[in-house]
Amino acid sequence: MSFSFEVLQTDPSGARRGCLTTPHGVIETPVFMPVGTAATVKGLTQDALEELGAGIILANTYHLYLRPGHELIRKLGGLHAFMSWRNAILTDSGGYQVFSLSELRKITDEGVRFRSHLDGSEHLLTPEKAAEIQLAFGSDIAMVLDECIETPAPREAAEAALKRTAEWARRAREYFLESASRNGNPPQWQFGIVQGATFADLRRESARQLLQLDFPGYAVGGLAVGEPHEVTCEMAAEATALLPRERPRYLMGVGRPEQLADYVARGIDMMDCVLPTRAARHACLYTSEGRVLIKNARYTEDQRPIDPRCTCSVCRRYTRAYLRHLFAAGEITAAILATHHNVHFYLDIMRQIREAISFRHLANFAAELRARYDTGPG
Image 1 (cartoon, helix red, strand yellow):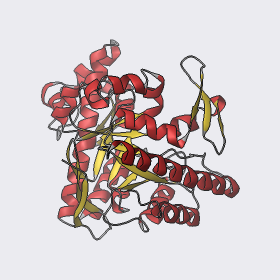
Image 2: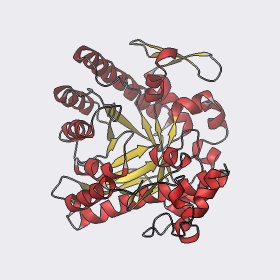
Image 3: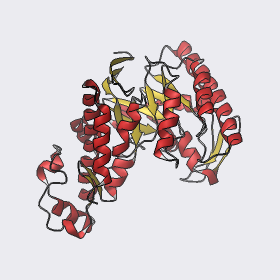
């Protein structure tokens, strides 16, 4: 099975329903990708992820490069074999992690020199190195190294980051294509990343420059880093308006449940976020009625499931009172069950979004979703 992407249906909002084919399975889009930073989605086994219907997950280049190392993963058969995962994997480039380690790194035109947060050892991550690492992983989709900057950012900083990101994308693309010609076409797609901070004209310019490199897919990065949701949507729309209709579009690092349909309405096909798993570990559960903060005393004797409308195995079996007890007792099972539910909830929202696109009423669904979260129980 090789790679392909096809838009099957559209919605008046601009949303698309499609099909992304990879060597490790066919993925219905728009899709939410659970984050498996260190080759594992925290709190879930691979069996559980398969039960939940996760067709693609995200793994992190920065963390896996530092531990256990890309050469070991290559030696052990690649990331799919190493983590015993039969479905698709997208690996990010490590750019965002380096951005978040501002006290441990220095960015130059060559790349990013940083110190490991594990042992203080020094490393140089270049566009070529990020591509090399991800080829060793054998992930289905690999991201180029980009420069992610803080928001709000002065225009000069955004312009400099855009220029550097474009040059890094060119170098990464050349390395990837040279490797393909030398070693045979790798079963991997490489995506470019649109930057430009919160400046619409810079977003458009970044997209135009990346189009010249002819990536099979494009991401929109550097958003959801502190700017208002409306600005995230606006910048995503500026980019997708210029990106090819027939290629997948990925908005990186988003978002809250009530926001997902808004991004899809801007022409986004793929999303990822740590929120469902991180919130679960902090006793925050997402439901069709809004957030449930399960540690609250009001749930001490609550015999209802987490979400009466939910069909996940946790909601079919356990009560809110029991989940509250597990968190109060500090039991590991609490985070496992909460994570299972939250990931199911996110994946089910995407299923409902795909269905809404098919019936051409995504705007109504998005409005209903926002209304639920404005009045959630807490």
